[in-house]
Image (cartoon, rainbow, N blue to C red):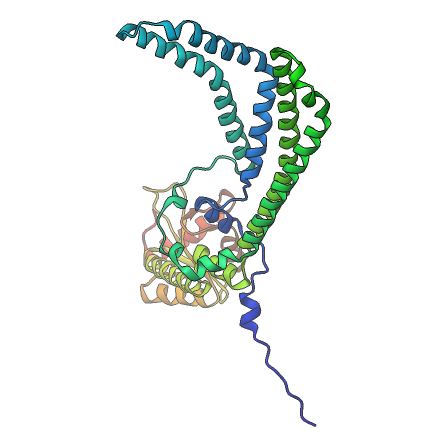
Length: 363
């Protein structure tokens, strides 16, 4: 009986984006202006802040507007048009307009900056402004047009329009009694009723938009994390780019070890004595009293390296002395180009004295 066995495409699974983004990937996306941000949050907060400003400063703003229109109809229209009068009229109207619209603009800017900072923190980049040819690709544009993001944007817009209209209808319907009797009220009462109704509409719509904006923010966050996901191969490639290819790093370390070995072997001929185990350890010692206060280990090695140190010493006439415990202690506790510790002075000094006697140069 034959079985059809279909091979598993491991490259497909390796290329599937299932892994969370690395910090480097997140930083790169952030530098390119890709952040989880909802414009709806800022718009809703600005609307609420402006209507809150109207609630607090509405009376004074209304008085300024009344003063502006009163002066316009009672004084400005009677001005004789001269250079000085036109200048005075322009400055006065600009000042009154700035005092009315200035707080609204200032609050809008502050709230927009605060909303943006709360979502993405401090970020300044010109990357999104750069011209990219792939943005002109009609195929990609069509894909974006029918993507999940576009569908959500359409649903969000329809939901916003419908819900705002519904809330406005409820608020106006609740005030239908006052609206139907507006014709019987004085100008001041009409303005009061309309101002109250406008504030109620503003706060109700602002709160509704804020709720919708929170849902939009969480969706943008989800889409952001989804787009940042990486495949296992992406993570491996990033590691190779940041840390270097392991094979190349291994070759570099091997080359560094070979260079260090050559430098160390070049120092062996300068040694006064090589202390051995005799087969497992070899430590080359040099003593220059005019330069150092104590003898210095200029080369050391174990097994194969120890054998090379002994061969180099033999080739250059450096005396080799066997002292198993001293060789082990020096190899374990003293690094290359490091002076002999004080507790080993006596043992090393006796060996050096013996070597100098052999060479006929006792110092």
